[in-house]
Image (cartoon, rainbow, N blue to C red):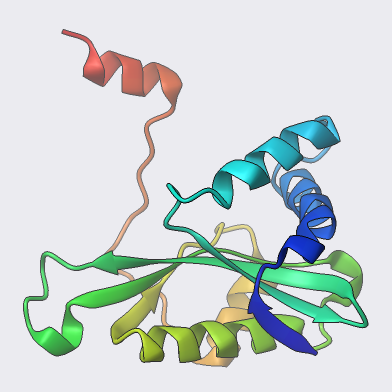
Amino acid sequence: MNLGFLTIEQHDQMVDLLAQLHAHYHPGSRLPRGTFNAHLQRLCSGDSQLQLVTASQDNRLLGFAAVYLVASLVEPEPAKRLQCALKELFVAPEERSRGVGRALMKWVARYALDQGCWRIDWTVKSSNARGIDFYERLGAQWVSDRLSFRLERSGVSSVAAP
């Protein structure tokens, strides 16, 4: 299995994985392939802090992780100042339970250490029992004193209103 940052040659297959990721979160929703292609172009632009890491074998993408680095305002000690955020970990459905997710997490952990990160943080849907089990098997701990909040468009507009 090959692991590394997304390459130009992998672009088309990454578009397919993004469409599968969308279908995973939004069952029954169908968006044109061009929407995912444009989205990937934006993600790969110089403005994005997101790094896309792929797992491939025989020139076929099996899954990906999306990570970015975050400076901590709470932890001023040099050894704790930088954290890695895992935005997504996705393995193609037909490739699950074959070590792809573990290999991607190992790559992300090495990347985090190489960048001087103190920890890796991520969220997982509470209904994703398989994902939760996977993360627990890695040794990850549920952060019981944290909650996830969200403002969607109408809430954002409401808060931003004069």
